[in-house]
Length: 247
Length: 247
DNA sequence: CGAGCGATTGAAAAGACTCAACCACCGTGG
DNA sequence: CCACGGTGGTTGAGTCTTTTCAATCGCTCG
Image 1: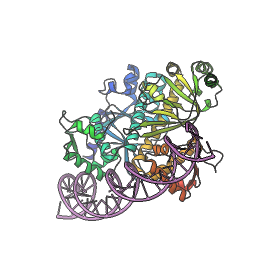
Image 2: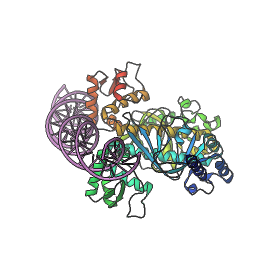
Image 3: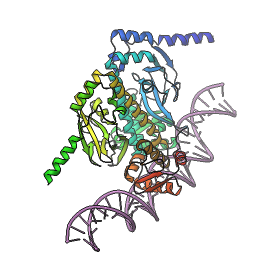
Image 4: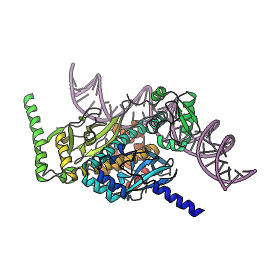
């Protein structure tokens, strides 16, 4: 019986190995500039796996052997502070790639990555990536573009952490969650992501209890509604105002 | 007389137009991968200027027409928050280039840059840079490397702002100032940079008064000595401990 | 049913900010 | 030469946000 399960899991893993050429996320990914030959080559080199929710993809301090492409799933990228508390640096979703900073700079990971839900993630070995960078200028331009986006976002968050009160940051975080992961059904439905209060606190950069208190403030102000971990935005405009975002 | 001064200033500006091939900062700069022809070409295209202390090089929101290379000087790169308070994102020194993020991403500047002291800065027009990127793979790899460094640094500061108390962040900031700008004469001399208490606060992400109070704490703990804006590190190890940097 | 984890609430304390006053220094103009 | 105003630095007091610690609750899982 156990053997059977192991085999099944193995099969699932391999079934995950879809074609990059026809991958649903291809139009959004940095691999879109690959030609047919390169793309076919990528198929032969990559290895797709299913990660269960809460599984660690890589850890701060270890060395990258390639990069990860999220076919389907949600991932948190975080650093661990001196007291062991996580700070979530970025959230990722289908179509994003992970671990390219460390791979390219040739250094160890400066963040850890963990799935927020069951995810299908493809691994592409180091050499393949470097070959593409050398051969395909557009690919390295895509990498540069990614980096500039991440950098700009990081600098914005720097400003927020330094200057905005927790209340505003939490409001903004909820808005960003909507931007990133959308809602479950339509406009009047909960955000399509399950985060613990602790994760939320680790995005905002505050204590878990503070998040809980502010969420219940938001609820009494009719900005949001919650049901377990599900958060629904009830008054978008007021939440936007609460977040005090420039312009 | 006034005319004379204007002419003098104009002359100084042109005298500033030194050769990139033999520029003292060339070995440290991203232009080191340029060959002789490209480098000569750069000389013909660039334009060097003297900026007085406190002069703005570019402002958040405006569009880049090229990038800046610091031949000599110190620059603060900062964002302005909703209440008009600055947050210093990064400090730059001789050999650094400025404004490449906005130039490459084709977007407006997301930060402003102002000199902390009189500086000689060269401007290199947009087209020239893009030509190099297209022709010289090593150059774009240098850009990628810069971006990865900046990103890593930004993420580290994110963690610090979110989790560390002001006292630790200020101690770390002083250590970083030493790393970046060194000391005036030797080990037992003040840091080689003049920052107002306000600038210091805008690095650390706190109020000016808090910086002043903590600095005087540090003084009574014999960690540092100050004389006007000059800060001298008296007890490096204890300051390091106070900063609570990991490892 | 009990253990354990995440969520919640309460109370107290700490950290940091704001506001206001005051000081020190510097260059200007009378 | 000195009064003046302006800027940046410093100090004090009070306040508010946020954290910390502790206790409780609810739910799930074995």
